[in-house]
Length: 277
Ligand code: C2E
Ligand code: MG
Ligand code: MG
Ligand code: MG
Image (tube, rainbow, N blue to C red):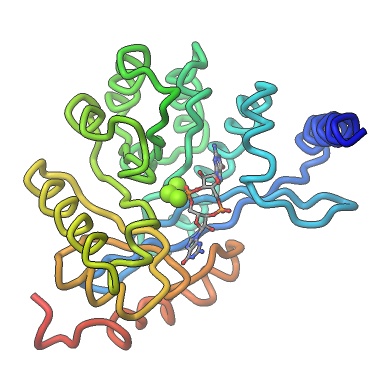
């Protein structure tokens, strides 16, 4: 009984997901990425939301897995990429200081045969310079490094940036670090949220930052919620951060309205200037 109900719900959602693309029910929100030294916004992460006509707002973790399973992640991912690039170009035209647009790439997209061509085409079509696009790749036990490495290298040759998302949670992160031509790593929130209180988390975060810097990679901390996290990360020379302390993911016009207020937060909440490096 319960099983059939679940299956029905899944089918329903899958049909909904198919029509959502056609009916343009997806939107992107943008979470600012802050440079922890200067407090400046130097990037945003595009995060998808589904505005379902009956069910209301649906968060990505409730439909991205199904989109991956059904293959719908390919057209959805392409829509995300195009919309995010268009938005970034629009901001640049409007005179907003240039930012890197980070887009989450699903593992399934890495197996899409024409991914590199599609990314190249979208950059050309939108006129966005490749250095302003970053693709976030998540470590995953499903990801076979040797299968996807040629694609990742080709993506890098387009001149875009690459980052490793949710670093520390995957199966073999050090292997990815060695093999992938990435520019930055994003330390997973599970280490950040306790770094002020748990000595082990603090040690891991420090070690990840030190290792990344030795490898000439930038480090981004995700889900910074508290002033204490910010100060700890600044003390340990983490380059960038995102999180509710600065801002939730915002609609484009909200982001622009709040832009300069968000840039004050590091100065207000973080290490005071005389102690900072
Ligand atoms: P992620 O890439 O690790 O994104 C970070 C998630 O943490 C986002 O959740 C963001 O809203 C949330 N977050 C940011 N700051 C804070 C904070 O201070 N506290 C807390 N509690 N949460 C915070 P969201 O938007 O629900 O996305 C969840 C995941 O779904 C993302 O994790 C990413 O893996 C995936 N995702 C989101 N958008 C896309 C997309 O366009 N394509 C693909 N393939 N995956 C996406
Ligand atoms: Mg991400
Ligand atoms: Mg992440
Ligand atoms: Mg995460």
